[in-house]
Length: 138
Image (cartoon, rainbow, N blue to C red; front, side):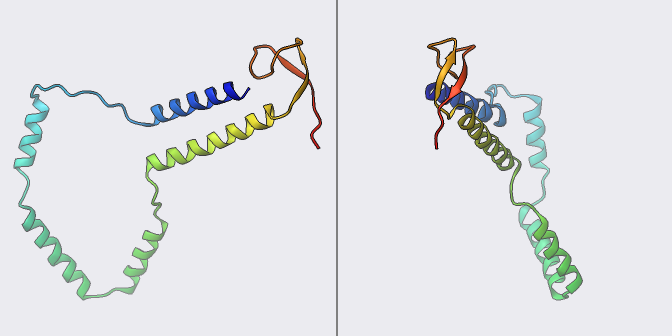
């Protein structure tokens, strides 16, 4: 029973991880039109030092005048944001489902079977095997 449970658990974990991660393929070494378009976009970008200087000047101007209402809005907005990414949420849900599955199997197959139908089979391992009487653990 433990062997089949472990096999099912490993297979479900591998399946869950492989479904939740993005597929990765090899990119060909040939230069495509997409590569040329990306090169042109990077060539058209403005100077980073100028952009940083503009943003810095804007932030200095904003920080010189303090607005308590705006500061309260910002603090509320930051407090309501969730820090979990989509991938983390996916793994959290998969973890909860895995724990629920483990609890289910422990409850279903955790009892010792005294009499099974057909005789001599092991419930949970053999197909069509049903436990008719469980031991009473007190």
